Length: 297
Image 1 (tube, helix red, strand yellow):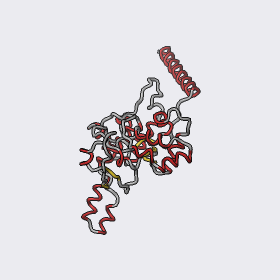
Image 2 (tube, rainbow, N blue to C red):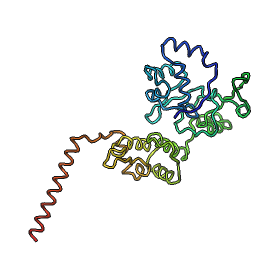
Image 3 (cartoon, rainbow, N blue to C red):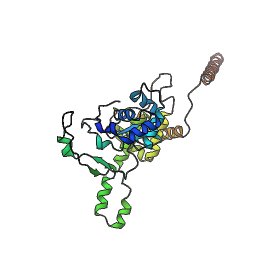
């Protein structure tokens, strides 16, 4: 989904970006700027170059995968994976973008590089500074903050003894964090961006976490997305992809984990013909037995 973003004039004079564009003969500048409109409020996006091309470079006859790989090569964007899915983000996002506070929070997974620092504008500047075509550039200072995922562990480390700091290198993950991670994975995989984490869904996930770890549950969700019947390839043409179906019980979760590891093949016309023939034969046999029973009576 495209969004309104801001672009600083200095971007068009970025030497490294311009030199890379000339060297590779690709529209890197317009691709990079266009990508702003495809990022969420954290500067993250799904790594689907072919789909992104339709929004960013619809009329350019270029290899979109090559364009994004070169932008990543020069550090303008970074690619990462989560649960087997590819994503990307713009490292300098918070340095250049002022996001409307009403914009929805990101549902995409956080990049795994938790040691990364993010440059952001202080709230005093965000609340008071305005920039338009007729004002002089506003001097902006930056402050370095840690990503929210490691704030709690850093707070512990401040007051900890040296030997205790080693124990807190990895941030503790709470039950609510696991529930949110699983729910976000389901929203992305099943393409339900407007879905809400209500009490019923929370209880379903919590119950599943009593039996399986986060990765296995996410694998089960992905396995459901690989199951043709659940994705609408059935006689009703309906999708059966709700959490209440995927996490119904242990047998159901095991089934979808198996489908994650060995995705089922959609039924072919020959398979359907064989199945129909077997069903007809079973029906005829049943009818013959019923006739024999009534005749003997």
